[in-house]
Amino acid sequence: MGEVAKGREAAENAKPAPLGTCTVAAGPPHPKGRPTFREHAGDVAGVGDAIDRRHGEPQQGSAKAGDEGSSVVDEGGGDINSEGLHFAGLRVNLNNVHMSSLKMNNVQEESLRDRKKNRRRLQILEIARGIIATKGLRSLKVRDVSEAAGCSVGSVYNEFGDFDGVILTVNRETVQALTARLRGVPADDPVRQLYGLAATYLDFFAEHANLLRSLFEHRMEDDRPYPDDILQMVMDAFALMHAPLVRLLPDADDVKIALLSRTLFSAVHGIISLGLEERMVAVPPQMLRQQVEQFIDAHLAGLGILPVGARPSR
Image (cartoon, rainbow, N blue to C red; front, top):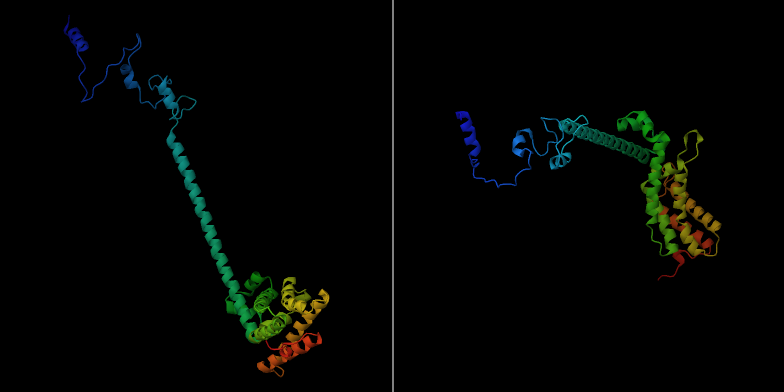
């Protein structure tokens, strides 16, 4: 026997040396004719690899099943590079973030524009209201408003449609403020409520004479009709005298009560408006208050209602 053969026989009879400190339990003998796993260990890349890289065919058994759940195989039998999928997903996410950022920027820009627009609108109204309050409606000019607001005449029109829109907006705010003040008059006693409404109207008129005059003096351009919403606001203010008259005249029909309330309100308005008119002989505030009260006394007496001055003291 040659030296080579002796060496081969010795290697086959030798026991494998232990690997580190680990021990391997002996397994059952492999089936006859089937090579051991160790013989093809170099061909197996891992449990997650579905392809025998030497033969190019799928593995059988549990390795195949495990691989089907963890990797992607194309129809040609080769591996799909998953890095491309990851980068594609990353690009989609980055695009979404970019679009979200653009939308957020657009919202912020719109918000800034809206705030700037609102500030300009309020500034125009404040300037117009100030001119009306101090100088009267006839002194209000669109160019004066635009110059004071630091904007063009076109900007004023863009905000309010036309110059009527500016005046109408101021008038709306005036009648709203007036109505809120009148609603604060106590309503427990209907007779005293009527006097309270007249006195409150006098006080408001004395404080905001030109603004209240603007409500009644303004005429629309091109003879356009006055907006219905402002007319309704004025009617609602008149109607505040309706409720106490209903309580004082329970047998009167609604038409009569409506006419009485409008007449009473209009008469009080006329007395106060003329009494505060500076171009004519103005009536001192205290004397004007007495005149208003005397008119209500006479008006109620004509309706058969006992005025406050003639009522017995409680």
